[in-house]
Image 1 (cartoon, rainbow, N blue to C red):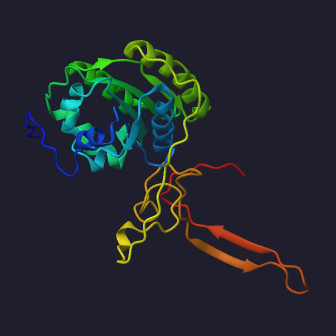
Image 2: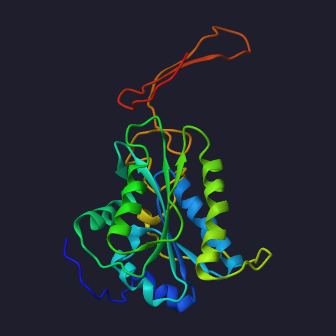
Image 3: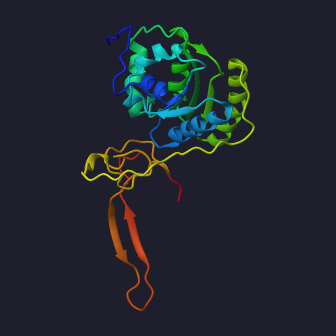
Length: 261
């Protein structure tokens, strides 16, 4: 994969957005079910109380070669909340970034970073993506500010994240020589924009997590990534009276869903 040594400030440049908004913290997420994105948002929001204004970013939407320029921003930090999916694969939105790291030799000297992984120990390739990204960034010259954190969805990934985050902020503050504001700072998170022209491919239609997850279904399936199972049988068991009891059978063939009866 070809890489330029001087990335340009184009529309997909996160460096341009950071500079324009006076921010120095960027939190990327690789998320299939939405948990990684949620964790990224929490870190970015909390940055304000530590005088590190942050933004959340989908690596699929930005030119990741901009990481080369992060060193030019004072007290800048890149955080990666990355899930491992399927057989040790990155999530759909982190695939290009992952391949860029694998195939390129960018000089990331001066980049400060931290990585938190989201995985499940019941799978063979537990947190393989986060482990690789953490190691590869260091190989390319970046500086690890906080030790790699690993979350296990088979146990309690929320507790794992909180434990890591409780270590994250004191370590970041010590590294950059900053102190917390001592209070939560209220900042605007959303704005309402009326769109007069319809763009169907950008319209949210009820998916629990990412757009089109109901169309492009991929295992593993859970509460946040539900499998749309066809109904094979739907019949009434009661033959008369006011009571109703339905017998319903779902077709989960090919879903790899395991269940107990």
